[in-house]
Image (cartoon, rainbow over all chains, first blue to last red; front, side, top):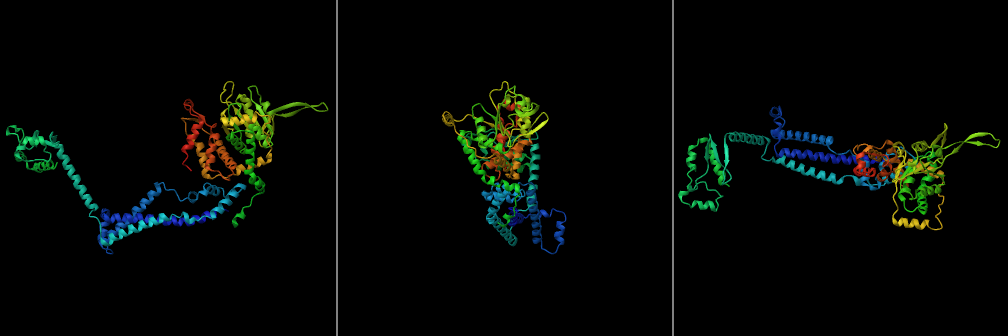
Length: 288
Length: 333
């Protein structure tokens, strides 16, 4: 038998190198996920799982910090396995094919090697010559050339760096001031505020102001209230005062528009619960 | 290298060894000798040799005067094979091709039937303008082409090996012709389309054939040697990946209902792989490459796909479709 035993020998050799590469890649993924969990205090998520809180309090082997680290390590391991599984099931990664690899790495074997391998049991005058040629060529190659040394080295370095960062965070207790609990609280507050605003806007009809392009007329109980400041009052000046507006400040009091209500009066007439809203409105207006 | 000695060949294989070792030289001589007689038309010569190596038959579509008869008679001279020509006409009868029983009187005056062989009893047969023969006569060629035997009056006669038919048809004159049925088209291993030679080649043709002395062709190989070359051709190995590639190309012709009414049959897959083997062998390679399959896809498939009405109406040819299929499958290997 020619070619096949050599291929099997090379396969054994290369399988180990690809396993090493796979190990470093998976380990790198695991440590990276673990680091992310440490930085963002993701152990809190584990406490949403029923029984974990109780277990944390009842166990006496580890203090809370190390117990939380174990929880995060378990989570990272689970996620790594899940990612690997998904990648294997749905990814386009083909199985390790030594013949393809050799034909790609050594162009002199292109098609000849696969043909020789597929016809290694079909011996005739033509295949004999092909098998002999391919076998002698195959015996002369340096299979070390196709070991993915660069990839193994890169994966190892990444693994070392991320492991170093994770170790630093563990021993220094470093993590960002962000946690899933905080995020959930913030999220809850935002949702609450949005709901409150939505219910307010349902009751209030807003008419945009033509001058400052902002909502300046509020209709309250069917009555239209102009939320504009009388310029002569010297109140509510905005950064958008232009030459025309400035000129109007120098006009006589005869040009005073009686339809405008003084903000002071207007705020006095409004119920107390609207005060923050009006205050917010003017603050927004002055910041433009 | 100790393992190399383990391979022991059977005697039948060992008998082919001298021919296999000499094959590149033999092909070189064949091409050189044909080149002495024929100017240009290298692709046609190559494809005829491929078909002969595969024990197949060739359909040539070309205008008259392009050297088909000269090529095929030259090949027969080089290989010391018997050559015959059939000029097909509508009144040609099957017996005119296969032969018939005739009454013969011996010295004693007694009469008996004797089979008189027709022109099909040759190694190389040129069936000129095959589409002018009636369907009945065309079908008489079927048995000869496929089974390499003829049956006359319930008696079957085996044809001499190698047996090769080169049929021609004129693409422009369709009046008074009988288009070859699909079943018969499928029996031709390849279809060659011949075009006019370029001006330089035509200049050389004029020089060569308008002189007093015509080129002389030497006999280069024995018939038995050519039979051995045919046997070696089938032994050329091909990888499983390339077999799948060839089958995939043929399969694609069945998946284009808009353009192709009827795709190529599994016989086309066999033909494609065989021709690829012969192509590799002619190149002196002991294995089939992807390029062999690609280069043989057109001649093998072009007559095996029947275009839809829409495709024909839009001037889409079978060649264009096959080239598109090849283009689409480019990245598979």
